[in-house]
Image (cartoon, one colour):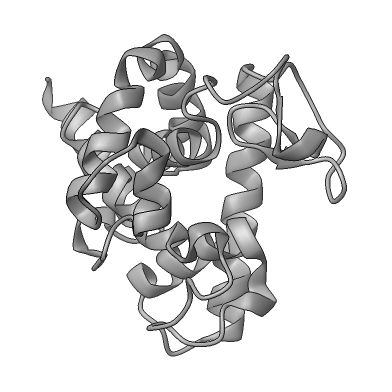
Amino acid sequence: MGIPVILTMYFLACIYGDIMKIDTTGASEVTAKQDKLTVKGVEASKKLAEHDLARMEQYKSKILKVARAKQMDPAVIAAIISRESRAGAALKDGWGDHGNGFGLMQVDKRYHKLVGAWDSEEHLTQGTEILIGYIKDIKAKFPTWTKEQCFKGGISAYNAGVKNVQTYERMDVGTTGGDYANDVVARAQWFKSKGY
């Protein structure tokens, strides 16, 4: 890796906060059971992400391109894809969530006008823009929170909305599996170690 790439990756990690500095409890028992894991927490999140890695690799170049364009950490995009669609494995013709969620990042058709094919750069851009919007909304709602706290809050809101985020400690109460932000953060930290 040349110095420009390292600086670029560092720069990406700092725009909304450093994913590696965010505390996380990882996946709940409910989420871990998706893959019949007997562990929960960060260890389970890492195993879930690892199970998705081979499929994720086919999207890596698109993820990195969108991450650069939107100044988002690519590991976070990968982690959301892992959590939302298991890197496409949980989708049927690009759809999930009882026909409401579209694409790798599961953009909800009830709240957003869908763009692009389910695995396209346009779709990843839309999902990333939605996430960024939530991070900004959380910053406005909690102006005293650090960048990392707002980053994690925005990830939680991506699943259950800004209204669901009431406190930092309990932001995952009401999210799918009761662990959405914590699981995504743990997966992102793992994907970071794999070059995302």
